[in-house]
Amino acid sequence: MKNTVILVTNNGMGKADETLQLILFDKYLDLLQKNNDLPAAICFYTNGVKLVCEGSLVIEQLRNLESNGVRLIICSTCLNYFELTEKLQVGIIGGMGDIIEAQTKADKVITL
Image (cartoon, rainbow, N blue to C red):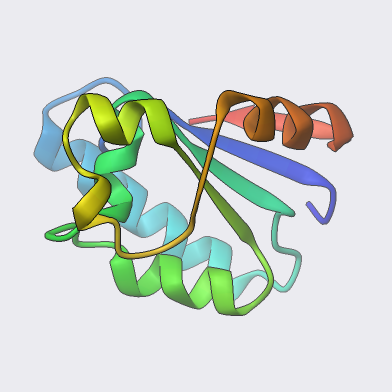
């Protein structure tokens, strides 16, 4: 996973009731942290940006991943669209160019 990028495009994981999406994403992050082979980056765009903002249930897990060297790249256009820029709690604000760069440098890209 060291040269893997994960794309998060939903406010959770999969396409289901939002509560279930959040439960699944929380569990995914929990198991990912227990694995010593972390991804290079996680990119958040569209509804995924909601996970890195105030009120998200997974902020602490994402902070832990970031402190362990995982780059968290947050789409600036999406933050602006949802008016969440001021509520960002973790990660770095980047543009689509930053997300594309992370994807092209990766050996593998996983979309959740």
